[in-house]
Each structure stands twice: as structure tokens, then as C-alpha cells.
Length: 124
Image 1 (cartoon, rainbow, N blue to C red):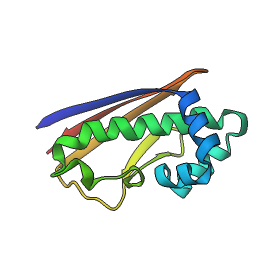
Image 2: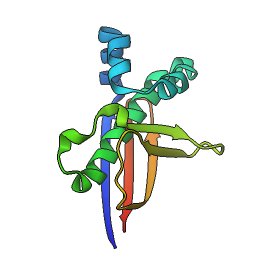
Image 3: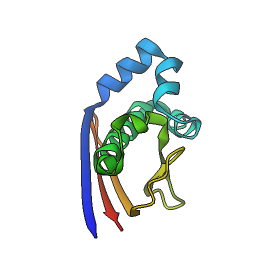
């Protein structure tokens, strides 16, 4: 059994500026429709949620990168961060299969200025 982890932190202001500058082009390049709907539902705090999902995608990539043949085998929208019925975040891998992953746990946090995420992957 192998365990890997990934972590990321980002300034919320950077994501907000990207969304304001590039609009839907940025959103559709990085986020799934489900993620966009979720973040937009947060109204005044939507940028915190966008940034948190961005950090989560980066953390997932870092944690699973050793299982990829090529780092270009995965894109932004191949990782989807959703919440379960209790509000806990979960990362789904879309359009890509990594059967060696046994379990993946994700944690997300954000405050006024920063969003961060940590991911732990247990491999078979």
C-alpha cells in the first residue's frame, strides 16, 4: 500500500480577477457545470468557493500525479469537486480512470483572503 498527498493554497483575489477578466471563458476551462452552479449559488461568497475548488483540483493533481503516465493526461475538468449530503467535499475523477486508487480524502478551507485544500490518496 502506498499513500500520497497533495496540498495547495491560493489567494481568492487571483481567482476573482481571473473570473472578472476572462468571465465564462475562464469558468468553462476550469470548472464543470456542477461546480459553477454550486459556486454561483453562494452569491457574495462565490469567489471563496471557486478558489477553494481551484485549490482542491491542484491538490488532487499533486496527489495523483505519480499514477499518471503523463501530466498532460489530465485537465482541469477531469477533476470535479462536489459536496455530499452532509456538506463534505469529495473529488470525482471524470474522463480518466486510475484503478490503482483505493481511496481519496479531501479537505477544503477558506477565509477572507485564502483558500486551501489537502488531499490524501491511498493506493492499492
